[in-house]
Length: 360
Image (tube, rainbow, N blue to C red; front, side, top):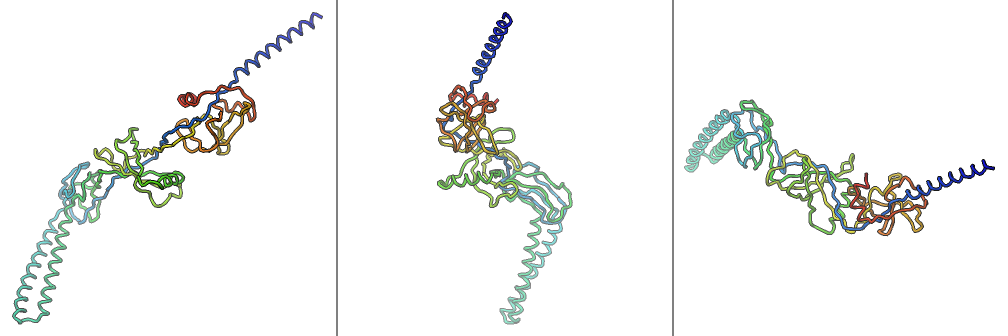
């Protein structure tokens, strides 16, 4: 009898202990819940970009000869018309002098024939032939002058000289590359935009003629001082990437940007009355986004949502939620569909201000 009483006592102690643990567990399993919040915000998107000069050309030799003189240095800023290179002009000077002499002789011959024609000593055909000979001589003289001018390479516009591809005294052939010249007063910045974003961009431009402004995040992480304007879009999509190239023009008054630089174009887009939730509160099934919504019976219900845009730690919801819904913030893997839970409701403003904490 005593053994039975002892056993019953032990069972009572064990039952009390288990019950206490279950209650403690239930008390510990209190989930954090919050509401979506609706407010105006800005969406910032970065696109990998390539910086190009508004004018960037190759300067090539137009005549064959030895490079006699270099008047500038690499990286030097030059004005339009500045003499940059001279190819040894001796041969072309001699050709011009010969052509000049032939033109002078043809002029004298024409004048003598004209006097004779006026006196009706020679036929008009002879005067016409003399005139044709003079015109030919003048044309050849003009051609030699052009060849002589080609021995001088001048800047076609204001710009910056690039690296030299030849050195003083080099024998250059017609068409050989001497250097490049860049006009960096304005810069063209190219970046690729996905098709869906391109369509959204065109839709927003339907009711306005104002060209959107963008920023340029440079390679050092600093934002360029001057905003750019999106001026043009290329004609075709890239079939391999599904992207299309946009071009923004940036002023460059201080000359900081150079041809060939890289960076990121930053586009800022305002969102009115955006419905925002923490990314932490979502899960994915077959590439679709879901949240757990707590109904009036405190039961967990999964609900599909559509995402309109993305911010750091935040999704902007297009469809599927309202500000009155209660969504599970933490413990998404610990609950099941239709499970009844205990929860603590956190104010969405507090949640948004501590997103990095929740994201850990």
